[in-house]
Amino acid sequence: MERELVCQGRRITREELLWLGQWIADHRQWSRKRLARELCQEWDWRNARGQIKDFAARSFLEKLAARGWLVLPALQLQRSHPRPQPAGPVLIHWPTDPITAPARELAPLQWILPGAGTPEAQHFDVYLQRYHYLGLRVVGQNMKYLVRDKQGRDLAGLLFGAAAWRAGARDQFVGWDQTQRAAALHGLANNTRYLILPWVKVTGLASHLLSQVTRRLSQDWQHKYGHPIYLLESFVEQGRFRGTCYRAANWRCVGQTQGRGRQGANPMQRTEPAKDIYLYALTRHFRRHLLEAA
Image (cartoon, rainbow, N blue to C red; front, top):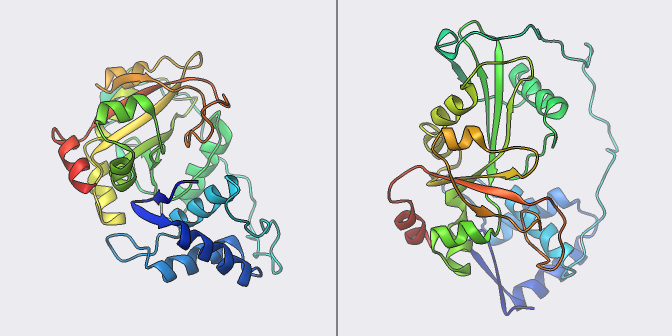
């Protein structure tokens, strides 16, 4: 094992790892969620706005456990006090009449940031679960967009989240080493999900939305998490998609993954289909900003 680990820009020594294992053992009755929150307090692990980075801490703990370097409590699949269920019906219904008008006739578009517990958030989650081939998975810092036309009809959902820990072609394009990447990876965001609703058949809409979201995402991220985003990435599965909308929106394909997943834990094990890596710089000087952050 390395003398030091790096996660979210924080160096973790072997001694700290030993302390962490004992600390978890001393609080074995705690859930993983509570361990992550308490660890943030112990290590003062916060973002630029002073908020604890509990999602990042939990991801870090589970990554260490996956490598066999510590043992976490079992996942708590059931609540001792079940959350009350809403009295109304669980199913959500929405119009699915075909939308085929030219994109210009749908403007001005509404870009909605679905707040937790709102009908927009519920629609967004159900859309991704039902219509995206990967379903819905949200971990750590993220940004959701629900796009509607001028009539209030839902058109698309976009989800951005944490960047992949390593991607050879991307890392070569940025020009950073492992230490620099660990310290500055928070300056990247990954377009983890992109869905045009299946009844929306509007030529050029997908690339148009990609172009629009690049103009606002960094500012939205700054407002929510206290730091900007300088570079976007997306991984497009070969054989399933051709990346046409990304190329039309001036994203750049810099190479392909080796099919080892976003974390790239085992260089010898192929666990996922190979994907094309697309990047989009939100500023001309993205390299300077990222390397300065490191």
